[in-house]
Length: 409
Image 1: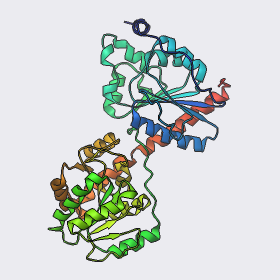
Image 2: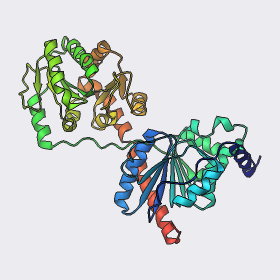
Image 3: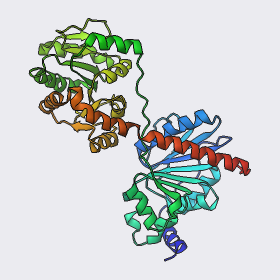
């Protein structure tokens, strides 16, 4: 079956589906427009951080983000002018989309490839980049009886950055030109660790001395009991152990201090300037701005909102990028892929209850024992920076070439 025959068969099948509603609510902005498509919310976050950097380097460029799921009512993320849901690959939808938005470059992150839309864009000469596609996303199992469809779709891209060598090899095996395919790091949301003043870090390090310290960041009310029980258990073996707790909601600091008092633990309030003496067992740090300090001091960090559902969850990459080994509960909220990546690299450990958390703290709170996890976490948290730099350079070059060729925006 030829490339065009396979595509024709797919289009015939697509025509059996209901055509989507026509029309767009927003006008195309004047000037250069980058179309960035994300398969999944985490890729959208990463692409939006990329576009923030791109717009800082190329003022005046606009960004249309598209996603593979409904985002009704969700705010437009930073770095984007508009966000649309692409739910249909109906042939009748491709031309209106391309006619209305007239993108100058397409960046497609992940799988969920839409053959009708992508081949229509390629036929118009639109420069296109595919990145962060995994081996399992290369071919759609529903189209396995159209073996040339995957190649026809992948051939639309000028550059393909697969997420690993296995994915790159899979793409080459189906006949895509080898010189346009490379294996790169995964696309991840960028890491911008919270800042910390050097003088404050030096003073805190001096005051805390050599005490072993662990941090619980973004902790929900139902998690207070788990964290405090684990700390009490760990204190039986690590007598000078100090816990720093940063609640997910700063307004819950008084509730946290009450719970600490009820357990018999001795605490100090960092925001109130309470002195931290040898008798202090818990520091309550309710200002999220201080997390930059604690990430740098504590070699071990429990990421909260992972035992209980709720708002206020934090990316584990914040702590990992600053050299902390990561602990988390069984229900991470919103950052499942990040936790999975860290666990795969040996940089994170899942603990299911207070007893297991206490044992993990005893095992890992000494910096020399958590160092291997911390190094692995730092590598995972920062590996996407090179990909972002390369992508910015590539898109800039594509836009420059299109501008010099006099393409009509």
